[in-house]
Length: 261
Image (tube, rainbow, N blue to C red; front, top):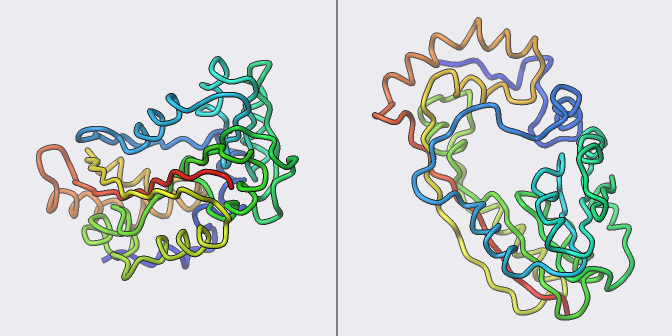
């Protein structure tokens, strides 16, 4: 029904360095352009509630993107540091920071450029999993780490993959994300680890929003190709599967609380 969009010469894999750089060059922000209607509490709000209760001292946000989420902790902490691999996002963050907030560019695969026992708390909001062991090093003993990651079986690889085959990945088999998270936790040195799975329902209200999801952070030529070759079928499939609020999607997130040893 839909062409394999990964075969388009301008297609970039989501979350790759090139994809992030292209998004930063286009908008300066990691911000979704489509609308979503949440049914109940947004999963990320649970992380915000936990952080609000625990925040103190020196705080690290790993995978901070353009710093909008990071900046909100400025009045609650002594120092807040955002860390991200995309220089364009860091440029945006630095234009809007408070005096006790700073941003550092780098990749977690290369380690974290901070002293031992420097932070009181570190967290990631939908960020990487490759920094757990380093997190145990840079957070003081007994300090908290809050880890929030998109989980297996999310809407883009679930309901959307069934409604729009070819545009979104089909439902995934197994739990590859959870397996990687648990593997990295096992070698991290972190203690008092508690993990839960959060279920989130979001309705995608229009075909135009589906189109924006498909083209997010891709090039203008890619978006034009999708508009010409796919949009009529997107509308047809949307009308076939939509309910009153649109297309229902189910997202799963892994939320982990742990302490540095």
